[in-house]
Amino acid sequence: SKKENALPRVVSVTSSTYKLATDGMDFSDLMCTKTRKYSLFGQYAQSKLANILFAKELASRYSNPSSPSRKVWSVAAHPGLVRTDVVRNMPWYLRYANIWFGAFVGSLQKTPTQGAYTSVWAAAAAESDKPPTGSYLVNWKIQETNPHANSKDDAVQLWKTSEELVGLKKDENNTNNGNGKSTYSTFE
Image 1 (cartoon, rainbow, N blue to C red):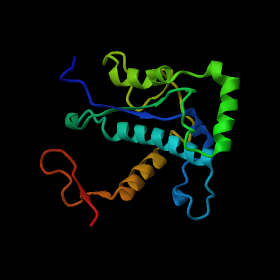
Image 2 (cartoon, rainbow, N blue to C red):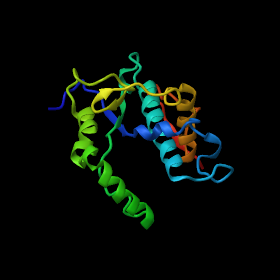
Image 3 (cartoon, helix red, strand yellow):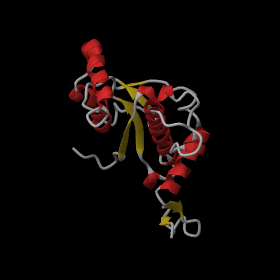
Image 4 (cartoon, helix red, strand yellow):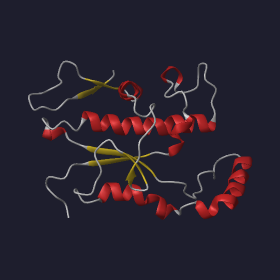
């Protein structure tokens, strides 16, 4: 049942492979069009690190107790090693490698339903059971993240870069409208 005082919840699905982004976020070449060479796992790790940074920055920006109208609960959740068909549109050699990989670790992998458990639990847990906003969850338990995923500077930079990439910017002439809510305008 819906509770009137329950906060909106955002669960960002990520992966422990964020740890492969050993140099943190590379904001100078996010799209690998300048100097950084594209690599499947390198980009995947960057995107999963970005998911954690986003979840933490969303929690930071929208958990101010003095502004109850702007509160959101946000976490990042790692589903675990899940057996999916994620490689179906990849080159044949990656699909075959995935088949062989699955044969060796299949007993360790979760089904998609099992993999969804942490995300669904985070979205639907009782208010008294949910972890603190900004948490990183693995198997529905809080787990610490590495220094790159804890970087407040990178989280803020990611937020600003995301606003630019999607064509949003904070309307600096009208940030309050008298109702305590920030407004956004699109770029012309």
